[in-house]
Image 1 (cartoon, helix red, strand yellow):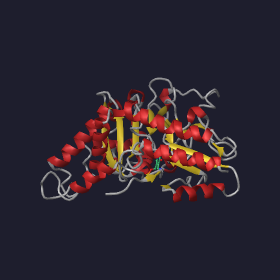
Image 2 (cartoon, rainbow, N blue to C red):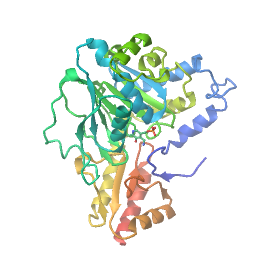
Image 3 (spheres, helix red, strand yellow):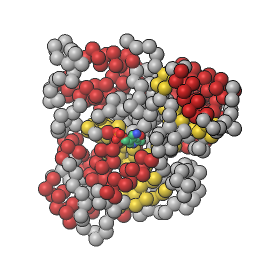
Image 4 (tube, rainbow, N blue to C red):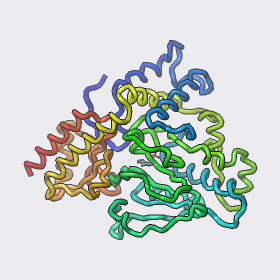
Length: 394
Ligand code: PMP
């Protein structure tokens, strides 16, 4: 039991209380087995059912076409950065043989996390390029849409192993209104860690989507991947053959537990899957489906962000919103408060009223309200009323 929480942290974030209650019960005794869900073998029928049902829930929610595979790995978003880089760097060579060209990954840098992902690809030794950088000379991240009139370099699909972007930049409060438009045949790879299952997405536009679970859909420790099957077939299942290609092109080898073809071949249980964390994801997705799927959730998320941006826009002298309207995130609402000491006063007064987790990321400061799926309409309405009162009294 717990009383209503008004916690707006950026992740880990609030989970639906009824999901946690069910999980708390099942971690002690699952399906009357006399052992908990975290204690069953990852190769048992019970575990296999959890894996398959969760895959099916995600496929149903996103209407994922048949030519895609859903799989899970340990590790979170950052492991996703490295895993994408090492696994996909080989796709081009298996498909094309030695053409004497080096296909490169291209990264759109639109905030803190895509920058980190790009840096990881470079650190691992990939010849990664920044395709488009919205980081301004003042160190701030501008949004993609504002600059989309700028001439973007034309990409030749024969020279691109993948084009990477982050759909929702958690720190900067920037969300892509739609995926970047590129020539067909280019594999788009997307980090959806902080807006996964917050809205409908046309999966067919992507080569690969990945998301750490701990913001919108679950607990830390699990990453969800959705990959187009022909992209898997371009990877090398045979690890000795793959090694030869990687050595030849001086590309990094993928650790075996993160090797996509190996993990997929073993239905996400090549090594021990964190089954309790996955079970939470199953319960969260069951609930989403029971409550009308992503259409409903998206409506609710739109409503929450509209009233929140609405109250901030009402006081333009007091609140400074750095992101242009079209690129404002539906999940992470970031703002600064003008006036000496007013930000700390705001955070302090909010805390006294029971609203917590409102501090901006340490790298950018300011305030951030994360309104993931599990944050209720009523909670946001109360927060909006508090902000209104706070602003009016300044
Ligand atoms: N990508 C995004 C968009 C994120 O918000 C985060 C975490 N804040 C990460 C990646 C990194 O996730 P993790 O801490 O699970 O490695």
